[in-house]
Each structure stands twice: as structure tokens, then as C-alpha cells.
Length: 175
Image (cartoon, rainbow, N blue to C red; front, side):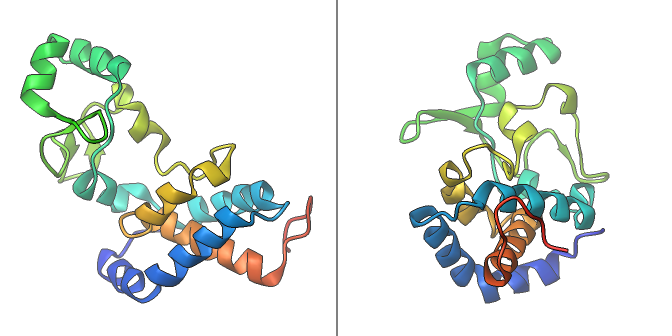
């Protein structure tokens, strides 16, 4: 389904605070069925969201580039890792991470919402939005941030809220 970014921004303004509170409660007191709920919500999200109609992650965020990302991408671009870093990245001293110098991402094609280095993209991009990480509680802080940028994360949290409200017995999926 095509993402309407204007509608998404309105939803974020209306629900961001309650969603963040919900994620904090999940983090502090995770239900036994948390991982089953997360997996179910993930399947629901991808039936409703088409990332290629959005690209907000590439427009508004920057991935972290690991040393192996830098090596792989620079080789793909036929550059040295040092030249790649100098041209495209900056080192965030606070987080000790390599990140894009600018936004939107230099590899994001605004005309078709595709990544020009997709086969060798950073691991952070390949895993985004990290909805099915095995330790869900370890990523709730990431989801708290991403709900304002990523319609898939927003929908995942919305689905998780509905599952928590309506009950989700361990080992069973809602009908």
C-alpha cells in the first residue's frame, strides 16, 4: 500500500507521545508473549506498507556505517575506504559512528525511491526498521525514535498496542 506522508505526519503528531509511553511500558514490563506479538505485528505491517512509496528513512535519517560496510561499499564504488569516508561520511565523536554527511542519503534516488547501492547497502539499512530483532526489548528504544520517521514502525507499534489491549495469549495468534 502506498504511504501518504502527509497523513503519516498528522498521525505522528497525534499519537507519538502515547506510543512512546506504550513502548516504555513494554520495555519495563514485557509480557511473556512479547516476541510472538512482535512477529505477528511484523507480518501485519508488511501487508500494509510499501517502503518504495515512502523512503522517509533515506530522506530523514542516516545509517551507521560499520568498518565492513565502508570496505564493501567503497570496493563497490571502486574507491579506497579513506576516499569513501572523506567524500561521503563524517565521524560522530559522541556516538563513535561513521554516518552520512548529508540528508537525504547520497545513495537514495528521489525519482524512484530506490537505493543506488542496494546490493551492498549498510547493514543498518538492510535490517531497518529492526522490527523482528530476537530481543525485542533491546530495540524498543530504537522504535521510540523511529515512529516519527518510519510508517512501518508506526504501524508496528499501533498493531502492538491493539494486541496488548485486546489480549494476546502465549502461543496463539488473534483471529
